[in-house]
Amino acid sequence: MFDYHTHTQFNDGANTVDEMIEAAISLNMTEIGISDHFGHYPTDDSNSFCIFISMEDYFKDLNRAKEKYKDKIKVKATLELDTYLETVREMTSLINSFHPDYILGGIHQFNGIGYRDQSTFSEICEYDYEVYLEELIKIVKTGTLDIVAHYFDYKSYYDFKDESMFYDLYKELVQAMEDNNCIPEMNTSCFNTSFLGVTFKEDPNLFFWKECAKRDIPVIITSDSHDVPFFLTSAYKNYFRAKDILQRAGVKYTATFTDRKMTIEEIKY
Ligand SMILES: [Zn+2]
Ligand SMILES: [Zn+2]
Image (cartoon, rainbow, N blue to C red; front, side, top):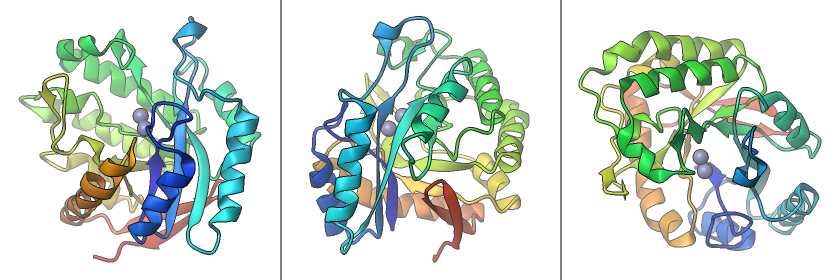
């Protein structure tokens, strides 16, 4: 069991790097990836969703933690990139200069909807999700990401009557991942949680995960934990729930990363 998507006090998390790592050790995890937010809104720098310290200091601290805990757990260092098609190449090459173990990226703000104005989530419709998926496919096709963060984020806020209208886009997204050596995460932070009065939906039909299974694309399970209590309780339970979903979808592989090199492993069910 490992988790490649966790946050700390360096941005919007509640705990320190060491506290998150120690929680992972207590859960008997083999690896933990610290992935604080990094992103610049292309037209408005003040709107950036970023670590509070310099990239140098951030990676320096993660390298310190790698060394400190090396006998107990593998600590992986990265940032969660807030992706925009206009800047994804520039931002990933900047992150790359600090030798991350992998690059995790996903859309957090698009088409006027997103985390910068959370009230907009209630206005999501099929059209928004469609253009969001089209944008995500273009981002994956830049070949700059190793892991796509929460592809289903927008979907989680909206109860689509007929999700099959997006199947062609899902296929295209999975194809783009396969072509660009990029894998998806199953982000479990949305399971059973409520945000702004909206209860997130678990993937009901597994279409996307079955497409990954058909192509033998590895999937990683992540918690997106922002604090230790969530990590130790919900995230732990959700891990097994996610594993069950992947098993039902027929997903056979997961993967670990070191220095942006992927190692594929069979999932033990
Ligand atoms: Zn995110
Ligand atoms: Zn996150």
